[in-house]
Length: 429
Image (cartoon, rainbow, N blue to C red; front, side, top):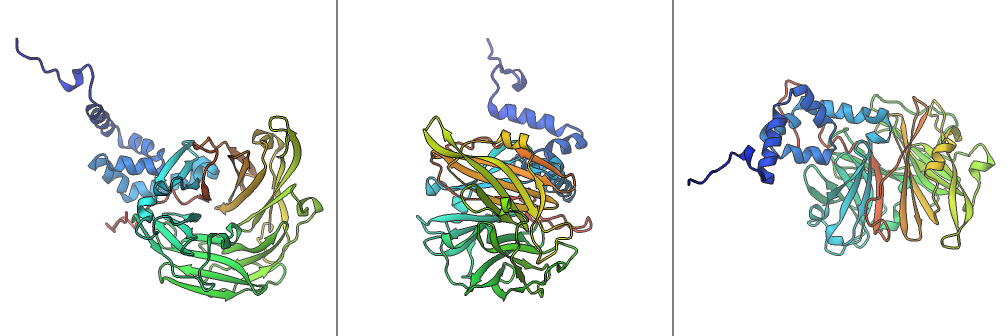
């Protein structure tokens, strides 16, 4: 009796390869509008994997029209709320497997972004790295041993060391989250500017690195005139950095959007004693011209029989509708009590980061209780006057996690530059 070789589709146990090929064939038969809708819902790591599956999908995903649609979809995802941004966490345990963990709001999932192989040519084995900031495809690290900065370009899969700043070599403890900013310039490209503010001999200075020229510039900030309007430009209003802070007392530095704008500094005050309170019951978080005041209360934890804290309220402050430079803090909004109850957990220590882009303020609170880390992600949409809380699932092995830096990036979904006009056939991957 002759052997019977069933057709692939009739095989009772199709191989994974044949199943994948069948699924891919069905996917490519879908109408283009439906295929676009499916692909637009994927996170960047998923898109990059799909792009490598088949030439037709690679051509579609790399096309200028799809890039433009994906950028627009990323900007408007979730109504501009947390879903439009990424929460990025650097984990280095063990060092050879150093990776960025990225939480994607729309999918509600964590993704692993390996960086150890990219870092290897620029960082010697055993180097102690700290993740400082991210913008578009650029990830900035501080190396504690060599006391220098290293930037990773995900699109080029390359890393390089930055020249020392005018302040000389600096260890990881010298960098303050509230006083630095990484900006893709122009937006969507792999070129960037890195700015940080620092007090030098009790005087605020602004330091700026430009990747295009691979050079640093330093400028002494001058005292701002109270109520002065910030210089405006079509592409943005400039950058606010916190040069120094001690609880509610801070020195803010404002850098205008033009290269010839002289930086200014001022010392804003809070409008009430509750916000300006010192001590362990108040946490002040600064970023992008905003301040978040996290109020807490101490309670007895019956499980550990120790005193712990719980969050009782969160208030957001800014510089008013006009964004005047040199003024005091003004209350923008308070997180509703029902949202606070949703993320109210015991903690022993807490820190945070604050960022704003396109009218959406994002606040991340990182706390630790008995060795376990917890993340709270909040956002405030200025136009809608709406708070949102996105529960962040456990990212695995959170207890005892060797966490070395965290950032929020609303431009990570724009790993490709904005497409050139239709008449141009050039593309940059």
